[in-house]
Image (spheres, rainbow, N blue to C red):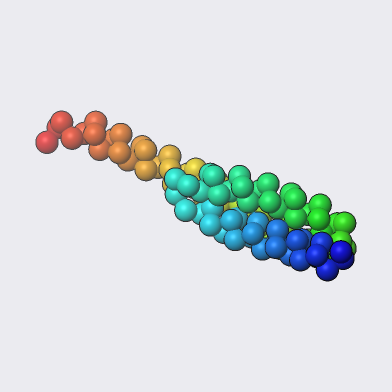
Length: 92
């Protein structure tokens, strides 16, 4: 049972880290970041029960938060550029 719980903690930590890094992509970064944060929370709890290091889970949390911020900024900039382009398209 100990080995299975440790494997679950490692798996959740790796999944949280991968989704955290993947959250840097525009548009879908929000969804990946939220799922990464949820998995990181579960991974931290599982790591605390098993006694495994929480390093990857913390890294997934940090990467997901930064990725969501990056994704939000890029998405807002893209929307502003598209709206500004359409507004000034009539001038030419």
